[in-house]
Image (cartoon, rainbow, N blue to C red; front, top):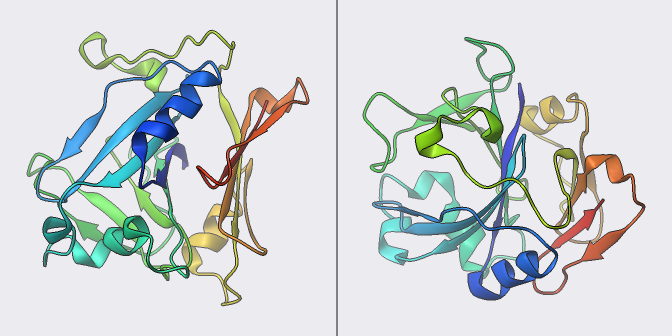
Length: 218
């Protein structure tokens, strides 16, 4: 099991995307999620991508189908307890299943044969989920290829560290994620995600707060 992508819930996706582009990242194609009430902006690296996720339809996001995901709570921004993050994993070998307890989410925007395996965890933690059909961006077929050559030279996401201000015991999904190489979830003072690019070889970083609850190190 390996990290496929992370999402950050945003209210202003335009400013968020512009901040990433100003750092020298090329934007990929955006997506909308019919029936889920969300849309995104995406920035791809060779092995993973960063997604800025935002609400487009509050009624859809609170529907009987979507409400259990708690996406509305994460994206609306009214609940300081809710982590505005999601972490998606994919198989590291063919046929690998998620390593934490999950429930099946079958959103309208996916073909009927596909599903999202969502981890059982409190909303104070990221939305943990697993896509059995996902692959590295640099292994995508030509018709679905995304730009991952960037003016700043960024190549791969090599570590992710997530901080939560909640003092609850971590879920099984969080404990599982903490066993993965390059991943850490810790308790701290605020919701924060730190993304390491290319092992932080240059020793540089950018703090996107307060616009985005993210620090990027490269």
